[in-house]
Amino acid sequence: MAMEEAKGVVKHVVLAKFKDDVAPERVADLITGYAALVPVIEPMKAFHWGTDVSAENLHQGFTHVFESTFESVEGVAEYVAHPAHVEFANKLLPELEKVVVIDYKPTTIKL
Amino acid sequence: MAMEEAKGVVKHVVLAKFKDDVAPERVADLITGYAALVPVIEPMKAFHWGTDVSAENLHQGFTHVFESTFESVEGVAEYVAHPAHVEFANKLLPELEKVVVIDYKPTTIKL
Image 1 (spheres, rainbow over the protein chains, first blue to last red):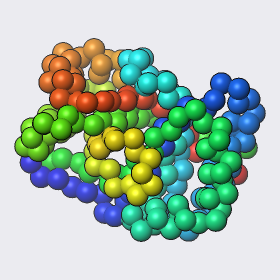
Image 2 (cartoon, each protein chain N blue to C red):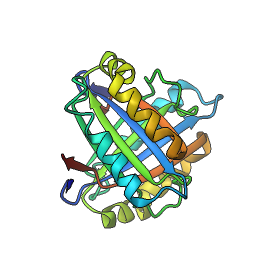
Image 3 (cartoon, each protein chain N blue to C red):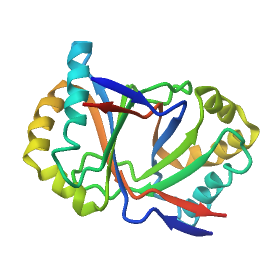
């Protein structure tokens, strides 16, 4: 097989489950706050999110996906250490019951 | 805030950790087998994958991301029920120590 890696792109994927007592308005505010990092943190190129619409029941209780796009792993590191991200993470994380964060370089396979 | 949902697109995200005794060649074969579903299952429009390159240590042991793209939740349902997917899943799942599967409609926020 031949592999093709999208040049330099790194996807930063967060799966989250908010605590049951977090109000929907607070969830919406936090998601807006997440999106608001894009114009502030230079290496963060895009932000997409959505709620679970799966039917297989393998979502392990996770309800939200947050996907950010970077041009390199160094860009992710710059984002993680950026004061605006640190401040936001300190707001978001206490509202979560559980979270997984994984970064990967999306690669296709030419069959 | 205004939300913009990518029209009809559904991302099917699988986070996986292979069992420790699964050989790298077997992992590579399975990933090729996953990609080989794209030309066989009509609603499956794209497949990307990658291994964890995160530095935050919040990946909870997950080592691989598999991301498939569909045009609708109905398309995902057709994929899930397709014999080629069922056959492949029956090969993949026994090799995994843990797995999360979540589908979402990637949405952006206009600030």
